[in-house]
Length: 120
Length: 107
Image (cartoon, rainbow over all chains, first blue to last red; front, side, top):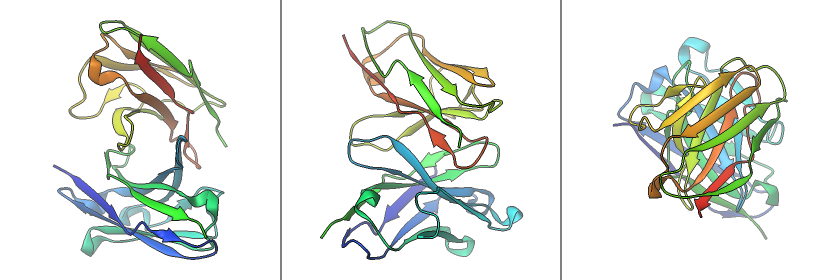
């Protein structure tokens, strides 16, 4: 069984930075692309960004709303992926989910989410 | 960006009902369409990918169809555990985009 566990959510001031972590077990982590999806309170789902697998050179993609402020990275030796967030705004307040995506599929497994609150 | 719309935005149904939710993409996405179920306070659960393929462990009462711009999710016989919000999502082009959701509640 694949397990996805996020951590690092916190209260942070506007303009601040935060790094979220995601650990994956029970799968061949290196085969998967890894995605972050967020959900603001009472709102729908929003895709945030992706880091592709090794075969695809670990390249990244981002939503326009976070491009230049957020960075997705991974370490296959640690079965982990991170979301580095900077210049945080109140609009970034959300539950952030990490998800595995096997090539040809999407969001096969989800974590439980971690809450990020941006407020003074 | 590819815009996703869903209809209806909400519906009320009874246990045993057949329920159909429609999703439309603003441009051709072939079959790069997924469906997710979400209950309050919980992470989304993946139901269908590639428009019609069930994820492992998803019961066969869920089915998906469509290609191009028009897609449907059908629940053949609604059960109490199926009352939730359902989202469609395209992964043909970046940025990946979700529909606004369809809330299914008890009549």
